[in-house]
Amino acid sequence: MTCAKFDMEHVLGVEKEIRDWTDPEYGDLPDQLVSDTTGCDIGDVAHYKEDLHHCAEAWRYGLLIYIGRVFKWQRDQPAPSILGFLARKTLNHVTSCRYSSMLQKQLLLPVFLAGCETSDEHLRQAARTYCSWWNERTSTRYFYYNRHFLSSEWSHIY
Image (cartoon, rainbow, N blue to C red; front, side, top):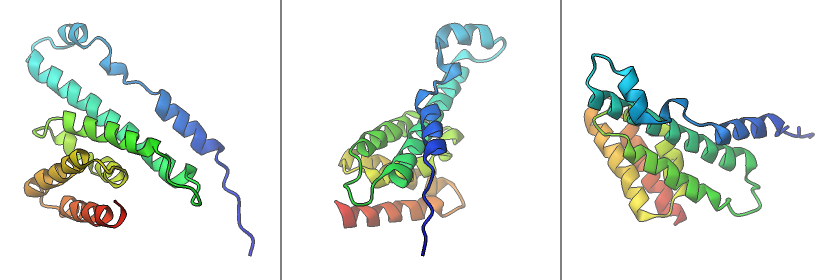
């Protein structure tokens, strides 16, 4: 049986784009708010833009975890230690996005990816809390199952 060799060029290009990406809307936020919010509650707009930023960053770091684990990890070696740091960055951004914001609900996949890579109990608790919060507020069971998948993962690995 012949195996195909996977060309990493495109994956590495995407990874570089993700690493180099910066949020164009997150520059000097106070000046931007004053000019962008005619007739709006500046506080609400500021909170919403902050949530957007943290949502984008959580996805960015979650995608880097995915690339590191799926495409770059050599299976005969331990997982790269940077994955734990990327998990921390991901979960920090998730918890910085307000629970009252529906944007945070969109972070289930980054939470799962980060949760699988962390051995830090504080970060694990953040993932549990996220899943429990959204499980109580949605009609889907994705958050419920995610929490149980993570608990199973943590009981087998660490």
